[in-house]
Amino acid sequence: METQKPSFFDQVYAVVRQIPEGRITSYGAIARYLGSPQSARMVGWAMNASHSQPDIPAHRVVNRKGLLTGKHHFGGTHLMEQLLMEEGVAIQNNAVLHFDQHYWDPQSELPAL
DNA sequence: TCCATGACATCCA
DNA sequence: CTGGATGCCATGG
Image (cartoon, rainbow, N blue to C red; front, side):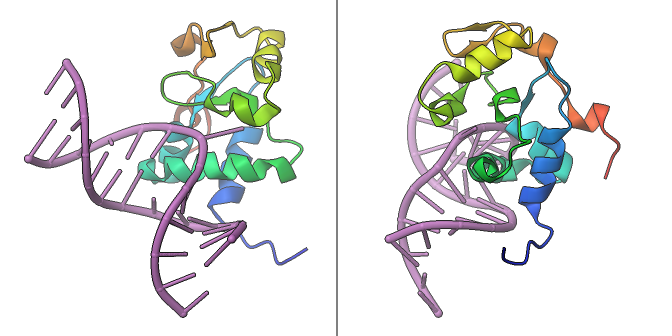
């Protein structure tokens, strides 16, 4: 419904949707890839709206500290951690272990805008 | 119509 | 080094 015009949200969805399995990225990385590092907040907000998008592996998106800040949005369960664990990503204390190892930089993996 | 908030990150003092 | 303020776009009240 409504006229879905091209917006930051769509770009965020596009990037998150292209995150390889077993990899994770940060809000700032996506925002920076879009050209606005300070729009990291919008990325998080986009994820909130991602509930309307079935192909948005939001569990692969964590904050700069590797903390599963959005876990609370997955139903209040360890679903987010479980999903990552299923993909081979170790989680401890709501934080991603070897964050740097599983880190996936869109700016490095995806073509520049 | 205007104001406040949002799953964050970065800069300045 | 630590704390506070700012920035971005969109949505909700």
